[in-house]
Amino acid sequence: YSNVGAAVCSACRANSYSDAGSSQSGCVCNSGYGATSIYVDCTLCPSGTLTDPSTSQCVSCLAGTYADSATGQCQTCPTLTSSPAGSTSASDCTCNAGYTGQGTSCTSCSAG
Image 1 (tube, rainbow, N blue to C red):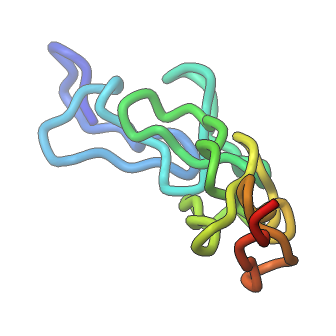
Image 2 (cartoon, rainbow, N blue to C red):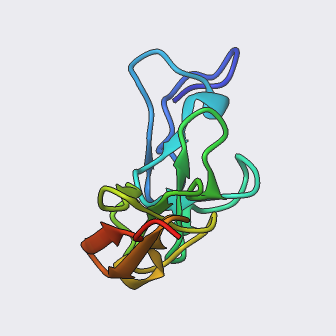
């Protein structure tokens, strides 16, 4: 990146990148990393979060998803299951209301 009027280009902070012709605010944290401002290094996001590309901050996975490692992506719970926001494991995905079972084996409850 380069600041206005600078004679040379500078490297982005740790664990980030920028497109050609960017300013310092164009330095975006790599997937799976986040930072609280453009002036601090990007650090590994904790489990249950991913990188918001618009802010470079670590944000919780949405309900119905989980992130068990810092892959930078939240995985969708299996069919007929859901999980609370910020879930860190597939085991956090439980059968939806009206269904019973464990993991990916959810079956509908009998009438009555």
